[in-house]
Amino acid sequence: MLWTIFVILLIMWALGLLTGYTMGGVIHALLVIAIIVILIQVIQGRRRV
Image 1 (spheres, rainbow, N blue to C red):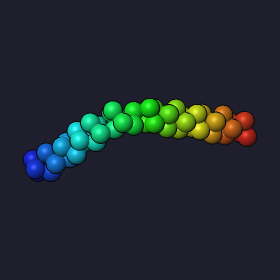
Image 2: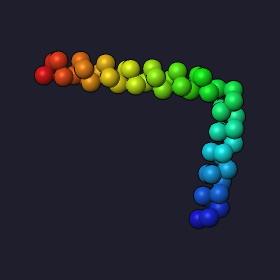
Image 3: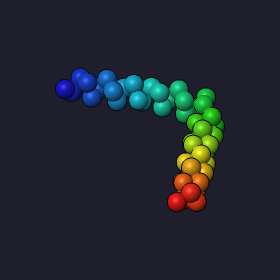
Image 4: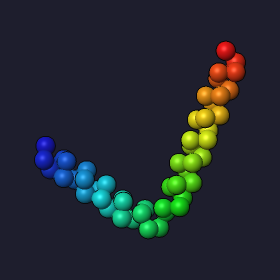
């Protein structure tokens, strides 16, 4: 059990190091795009009802 948690935390830490410096802007852009798409779907869903 502890080994599983250790491996998961180690992988997350490594991904954080890699993406924190090289892909930080890309990840933020994807998050913004995802939020915009969700908002559009919510707004369109409420107009139909």
